[in-house]
View 1: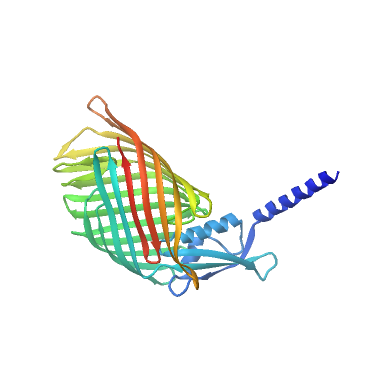
View 2: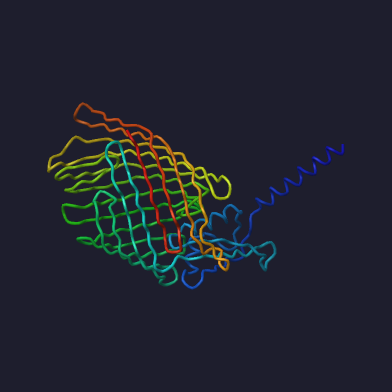
Length: 390
């Protein structure tokens, strides 16, 4: 009997702990500590929380994860204290912002079968906040990524948060190459962790060398960091459209071209998912699964070629590990963070050419993915290798 009583007490205690952990918190108000630069309105808009409503701890965690994923936020955390009204809490969010002068350096070696390439995106910018929920960023950049080849130029970008009193946001930019290169991104929240996002972008050197693209995506993002996540999952799905014209070497999808004058138009759908499962305090198992299907039309030297249906699928599984670098005793968030990642997976590419007996091209093989990243208060530096020896 005593054993049964003891077991019953243990069950009751564990149940009480579980219920307490899941008990919603009613927020009386949300306070934001951001220092001198980031506007509190931006943080509140990105949190997507409303005073007077109740939220679970998981939902509060997700709110802070969203704030961490802002590109100009280095770190964010929160604390709960008792409110003035009974059974309410005050949520205090503390944010550490990126330095005004910032950089983004990314270099990836991409190899597929006997072909290879070097994709690099580098930028140096200076940002300052405008109004209650705006950010203006001016910078200079250079890139070898994408179908339009190498380019460099100036970019002026403006971001607006908390549009229409919601968590909606819009980012517009104008870059200079041979002409203006506009782009726009609009996001509308759907719940606490989901977003509908649309993009449009055009890059042009001249009338014979350009790329234009547009997409619409449903995104569910529960990861805890923009650059170095260790937990959560991000899933996206939606249609994409692109049109390219280039007189020099370029790559589209998994193929590399060496042609005089080619114009390609692609329409399709892309599905991607990347979950992270923590292993200890600084490591995580991760995987990346992608699937895409595109219909492609092509003009080669002004003549239409057979249409192509292309299907790509890949899955990679690996391990990531984060290292904390320089730590300041008076400010625990002032540090460098490093990341090593490695993975192995499998990739399949299938192409069907219509009009020529439905000729089929199929490639498949093991793919390898390794990388190194460094996050500082000034930005991100990343080097990686993605190789598939078909």
